[in-house]
Each structure stands twice: as C-alpha cells, then as structure tokens.
Image (cartoon, rainbow, N blue to C red):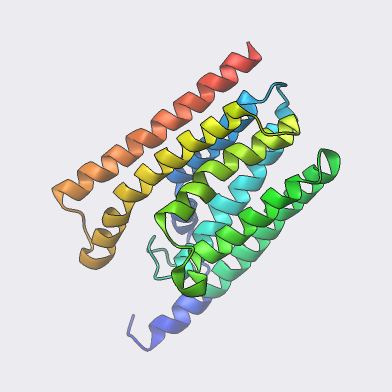
Length: 227
C-alpha cells in the first residue's frame, strides 16, 4: 500500500475480526472489569443484576469506547480499523454505557448519575487528550479505570458509599497506577521500535500476570458470595 492510499484506507477500512479482538485488549479489559466485581462483591447485599448491568456498562465504556478513542490517537494497538468505524464504535458504545447507567440510576438512586457523568467525561477527555492532555495522566487513569468502577458499582448495589468501598477504590487506583507505570514504556517501545526488548517483554509478562491475578481475585469474590 502506497502512502497516498494509506489515509483513505485508514479512514474507511472496517478491519478484520482480529483487529476487533485486539481493540478489546482482552487482558486489560478483564483486569478493569474485575474492579466492577470487587465493588459488587463488597456491597452489603449481593445483587447479581446490578453486577450484570455494571459489567455490561463498563465493558462498553472501557472495553470498546475508550479503546476505540485511544486507537484514534496514534494507533497504539496498530489495528486496521478505519477512523470512521472507530468513531461509530466509540459513540455507540459510550452511549450504550451511559444508557445502562441512567437506567440503573432511575431504578436505584439518581446520585448514580454523577458516576455516569464522570465516567463518560474521563473516557473522552483522557483518550482524546482534550484540554491539552490535562486529563491524560497517571492519576486520572488510576481514578477513572481503577477507583471509579469500584465506587460506582458499590454505590449502585448499596445506595451509599462506605469505608470498605473507599479502601477498595484506593486498592484499585494503586494497582491501576502500577499498570500504567509498566505499560507506558512498553507501548512507547512497540510504537517507536516495532518490537520489545527483553526488558519490555518482561514488563508485558508482568502485566499479563497481574491481569490474571485480578481476574482470579474477582472470581474468588463471586464464589464467596454465591456459596
């Protein structure tokens, strides 16, 4: 493909199924969905329907919407999905996530709308690096991808925030901080050099192991509540 054809291709190509799997970034998406489970499992009352809705909402918002917006900013995942397709995916998934959140707020507590608004704002401002990239930092990643899923899900299930939710949010934020510290140089190395050094491969392996650990923790918490 010559340089002249490349922009048109990236604007219109729907991409292949492998591109969509890559866009979901399964290890990281599963990692952050585990925080949703953490929030639901810590709530005083086990409410599986809240967990299901929260998983669906954050899967749409973080797993699809945020990654689609991120891919528009420099192709960090190196997919062949066209820009138009990415915009449609981002808009549809973020609207879907917000709709689930709004519907849940109507059924539970309207204060949940605050979490919906914050989540939508961070997803767009962080990934599109709006306001000069002011919201594209490690702290905002830790809060938006770590603390928010815990707090929003706990609040939806419990109707209030309690000490255990706050402590779990701190845990999720700190682990997400570690994730970004490890993943930022890995992403830069892959983008700039096209491959990872031995150090980069070790960091990526650590990230995958942390992802598996968080998923295992989430499954253990669910098993604890249902048995």
